Image (tube, rainbow, N blue to C red; front, side, top):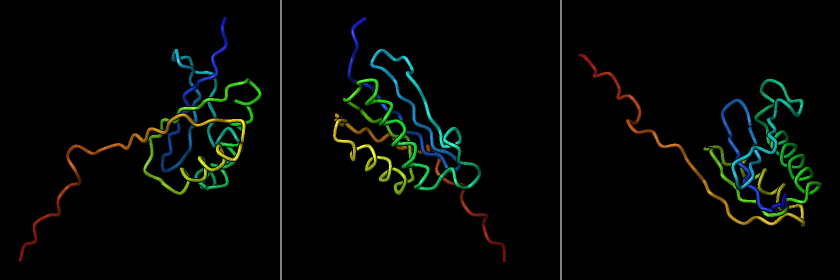
Length: 119
């Protein structure tokens, strides 16, 4: 089997957790990490420290496997943690970021309008 050096890193930042999934080009999940599996519990799961810890863990594992070309797919609205994760990945000189795709969820109906005031 030929070893490919390109992978997709999917980052999903929710209000309560951070998920990072590493997927090969063929669509096979190589591994995944969340802030809960790194040992963070409760409100600490969504801190920038948790995001940095996850990014370092994933980057070290990718380097040890020889996977150096990364394409990011990001599902998020939270920019602080996103910047922290990307900075942590870029701090490793062996990893090359090929592209970053930001997939922001769009609400189709919008928010519910206020109740009409009765006087």
